[in-house]
Image (cartoon, rainbow, N blue to C red; front, side, top):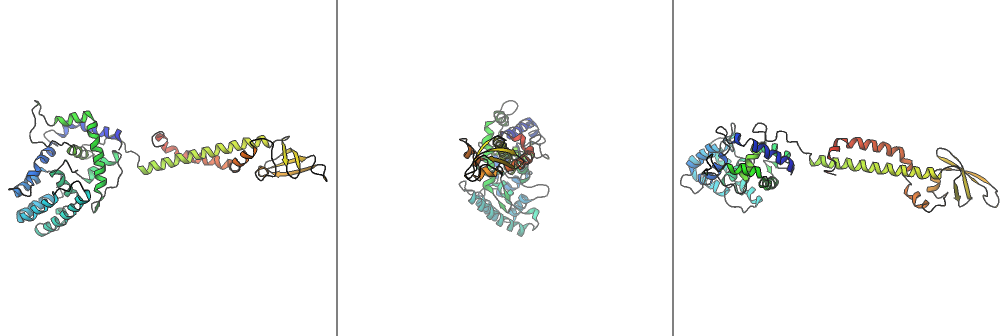
Length: 382
């Protein structure tokens, strides 16, 4: 998670707290609804049908919206087949011990059975069908201490700004473990922000300091997290205003790769220049060399890729000899040697770099240019 960005989002929440909870917006309704939802939607309660209708009204846009009537359709089904709807929610609300795989199975069964009821009693249109999001919403409202609210639009705005790039999957293949992982991480950060905790606790007291009744205690801050995520989109309260989008992990990998290539090119060029300096010292007129076949000699001429060596005594039959060699290949192939202790080791070390000097210069320029977009990340991801 990107803690700096989270602190910015928390800061915007604090700044707009009064706006969120004024008479017009009253986002505190989440705490009020969560406090009563378990009673309203009790599958074994005496007034279940009345309760579900009240829950529909009080849930506002958390479940239904201007073009979705999922919760209303179940309320209608409860009027026509109360037992079936009670059984639906009884199975959905059954304790799963935090097992997310079991939780997902419960949701799958709920969706299959609830949508069958809706097709039977209400409509076959998609706007009346329940889905992964609505099922998770019912679970959250019923027990916010152990569940998280998922709304795709809001989560898409929040997650990348918070530095979370996990793949939540789709509604047909939702990865609840990934979503809960993000929520667990952010929920753990909430109490670490004293200003946020102060503002959050203020909702439980009125202007005179008296306790406000009927609000869920939200011990694990899951409702607070839902409130923050809900307000992130620009068409909500825009908590992500001026919050930069962190680099995607793929881009971080690319930045690291570009940095490694640049450093490797720089090292290759340094080795090439070191090799050039070494051979410039060897390949000069007057330098002494030795040949196994011709004995001791002296370089008398140096051209671009060749040297001419004078051997004053080239054996018993020839008194002197001048031989041309390709350089530095003559040293690499052992045709000529030099009397210095580091000669053999350096010849082996510089076998490749010298011929690639021009290539390495070009490679470094190219690698440096490729790294330029990521220069600001130095010291962070490499």
